[in-house]
Image (cartoon, rainbow over all chains, first blue to last red; front, side):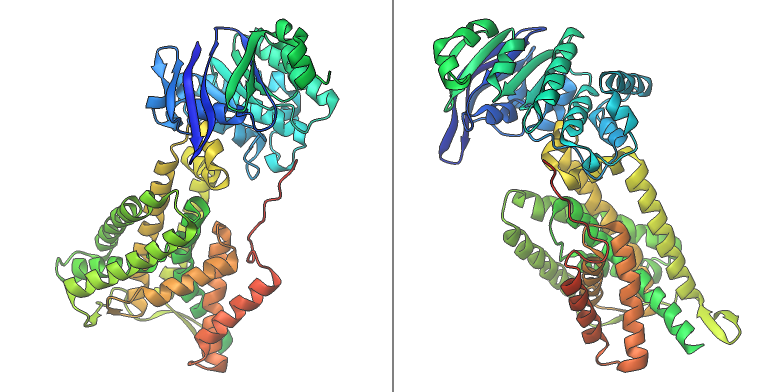
Length: 234
Length: 291
């Protein structure tokens, strides 16, 4: 579904991503783990077009994403939940969700998607008229996920969804990610919380200072001595 | 009765400031830049209306529409040619460019139409409504009415349409807006189009009240409206409305009760005072980040 080939991204003179290749297959949960500054968010931004890659290719199905304007990527079926949620604080929950369906024209379909989001996150339904800025961190994460789902993407990119959340909420969020995947959405997950990410991932890649150093199934990596030592606390 | 009449005249002048201030505040809200050429778009609008009424002999309403069309295209062109290439540049470069565009327009007008003042035709008949010795001119009524209509339409557009929602999203977070599939450049163009179209309306109202057309005509109303936008809280649409009206009233009161010469100084002194007490302006909000 998503195939990254020899991707390079630079910030001025500094090469943040030094040529990485990885793949996300139809219906999979694939996770990219790595320490702070390894280049996880940079990779995500390059895929969704927020950053222009210095080289390499990003194929979504038959479409080369680096060749189309960034605002058209979501209508190709790829939606991203950005790091730090980035909900529109001054708009209501409902307006945020409506913005998630910005590229869609089918009113009935949009209403249906909103019902599905409310089923997945009942808390959002209760707070639908509330400004997004007044929500708690966990609720904002749910809103950011719901907003991305409003585009009915075939692949969902999640950037650090557990950041800053209580352990209980983290469990809830990961549970919902699995749920979304079961409903047929492919997932690419970037996480610092490697333990949780590997537990739900079909496959995983380890990113270290701009290069992929290890890859395998979620289980393989969870049992790998190097991964255990570096990311799972011994 | 004098007090009431000054107040209504102040609201009339303030309505013009408010309509101009909307252009500043909307562009700031979305493009995060101060478009100092906005005042000169007013000047171009005034010339277009002047030629349309005087030379083409068109009635007032079609002339206003023509002026709006020209200003809208001009505003979008200015953005495309002068500001868009600087999207990634520092705020200072953009500011200097805006000042450059302002001088360019003033000099172009001087070259095309000479620096001599042209007399704008009378478009609103004298007289008005009298009540208990208080007379309100038709022009003041039309100006205040136009401002209210503009305000209502704009508020409805911004709050209840898909494009309005997308514009608000862009003003909060451009990156996240792109992730929603919003074409940020298009939203910025629309903002410039609306602001410049409103500038054309303001130009005709302004020239109806002060009937002289000259190349630097937009400078003073431009800077006053900018002040009004900051006064109300730049980026805020109700703020521009409130700031504009207050500024107009303060200016007329200062002229009437204190001194004609000092009125501008008083207006700016009030601005400084407000900003000292509330740096974000009257209705400006600061978004606090939640972790």
